[in-house]
Amino acid sequence: MKRKLPQIEGLVALEAVSRLGTVWQAADELGITRSAVSHRIALLEERLGYEVLERSGRGVSLTRRGKRYANGVCKALGLLVDADDDTDRTAIDGTLRISSTPGFASLWLCDYIVQFHEEYPNVELEIVTDPRRCFGYQRGRIHHLR
Image (cartoon, rainbow, N blue to C red; front, top):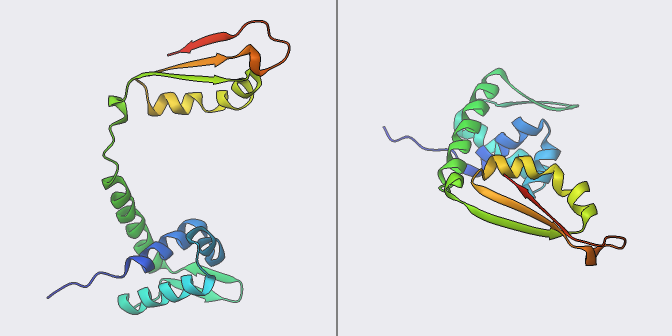
């Protein structure tokens, strides 16, 4: 017996509704109308032979069976996304020098340094604050982070 896969559009719509909790948020994220999200899920339900969403005046919620199915769909879509990530970030090394104003470095950039270092542990980060970019500074400073 040949198995027929559901359309990917319906699976993506279900994953978005499952994760975000509402059809309108899923529609906004996917860049389509609420009607399109509902239509895609209705086609998915038709293909599956059971309802994955309970519809009420207040919105929608996943059925018990829909929750189990949505969990599997989320895992499967995650595998598809990860299959394309063939970049080995630990293989990236070298030095990244960022030149900015002291304010930008201290007020914005410092919030993201830890995350960057976790994703690219072999990259040495140099932050250069240039005195010509900000009044009141006599000398630029170079900060080496490892």
